Image (spheres, rainbow, N blue to C red):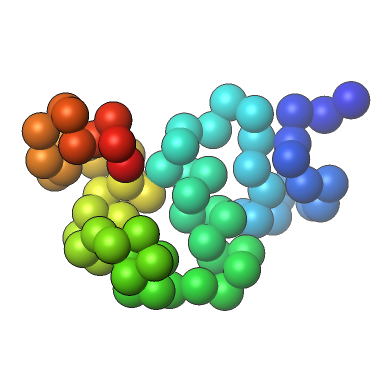
Length: 71
């Protein structure tokens, strides 16, 4: 049994592992669906910069912790 949510080549950048950060999981899933940061930001009612910071696990670039929890 593997810790991957997708059964593909382990070198594939579209593979999400069990221990991956939420940001990496968001990025991999977005990219695997061919969606842009701008589209995801619009759907989530967030600024693209917020989505990018989330995908990069750059929590220091995000607003106050109460908002981060909501994201």
